[in-house]
Length: 187
Length: 203
Image (tube, rainbow over all chains, first blue to last red):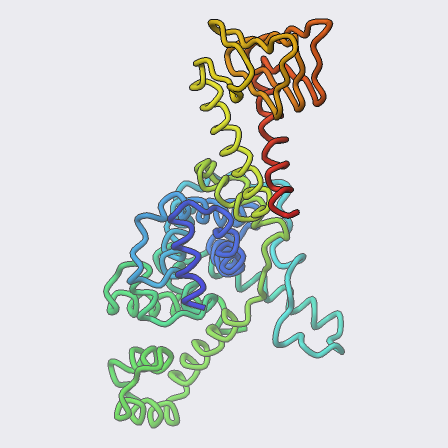
């Protein structure tokens, strides 16, 4: 997998655009998921994820191969998402679906096919509550929480992605968890 | 009961998976005794579980295509190289044709001086080759940058490149009589000649 990515990157650096399609395919789920959780809006998530991939392509020559390529991509996407959050205007997208209603693949608690409609509804509501809670976090906590629990990355990787000392990442995760607990801990 | 001052930190260390065994023991023992801290800890664990089990969204199916469409245009060289790699036969064929035509153009432009392939039984006057009355030339004649006047007989083909041919009423050519004045005719003639050569090799 790492070798596959390295070969592709070499080809891209030489200018082979087709090789980049493989990279996008490989990471699009992760990057899109990250953007969605950071922004809470599919439309913006797609725009931001696309922009992240385009930036990565344009700046491929600045990529340092000592870093994991995925970490570099995560860094670009996280920074873009944080920018978007800061610039976010109050006007909402009218065509935006209510988050957690469509296009979601239900997970874990819904894995049994006998789940009743009530249970499904409850779970959809839960999904929405979780997303709302994430969105209430200030962006510096939001990014570490999303990277840690949505992307399932180690503290070490997060520290590399965000270019922060490990201790800072830990503190932010602790504070993020405490803030989330206030919204979710009693459910 | 009095809670250790750093108990919440221990909870987080535990959740981060890097708690010292000693601290783990302190945490475990305290949680068994203190319901407030146990609630706090359960709340944190529940929170983590909720976030981790958040549903997974999938990007739209055309995501990759849309990204690719938005990328800046790649260098022409690369596109061409990829095209050539994908079409090796066409590449080889066109390379052959380009080289052939290229070399022909060169010879076409270089060979401006008068020349004639046959010298026996012919008279050369300036840039004109004359096959006199009553003479018989055996074999083909190729005249470059000159004309030919045939009053006698040629047993073979006559080719005039960049020139004119005059066949007198008494003159006779047993083979083909050709005049080539255009580059493309010249190329065609060369290709025919080469094919003939190749065929001879195979025969």
